[in-house]
Amino acid sequence: MKSIFERITGTISLRGHNSDFEEEVIVEESPRETSFSGWDKAEQTEGELAVDVYQTNESIIVQAMVAGVSSDELSVSATREMVTIKGKRSAPTGIAPENYFYQELYWGAFSRTILLPAEIEADEVEATERHGLLTIKLPKLNKGKIKTVKIKSL
Image (cartoon, rainbow, N blue to C red; front, side, top):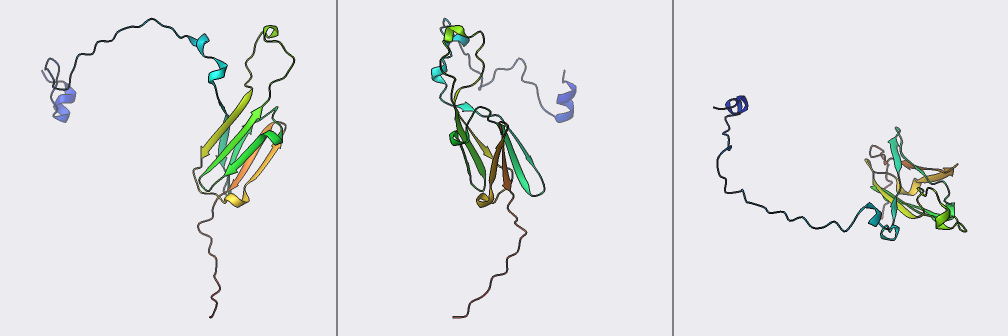
């Protein structure tokens, strides 16, 4: 008996029919050698920076928390289509690993490349940092702007 879906759409059921596309797959279980504790910090080459991205009428704004990172350790680069933030947060020195109860903060290099939802004027990008909050203002490209070109007579 056809299901309501089969009657409405005119399809046929393949239940109980062999298909040329089916194949039997045998899955062998192997002993688990890795666990979450096996993820070593040395394997993490670079962290990903969390960001907020929003727009105003004139600009796209990118914000990221970079507390503990000096402006010398930060780099912002922009093209018309994307912005990249790179930096490095240095771990405090003089604390033995066995003295930690919790160690959840990220220390080391981080980066984030964001594809922008609109083209921007890369030459007019501004970046400021205040109280650990990095704010990047990316002025939108004004495609409706008309520039009159003076014609030179040769």
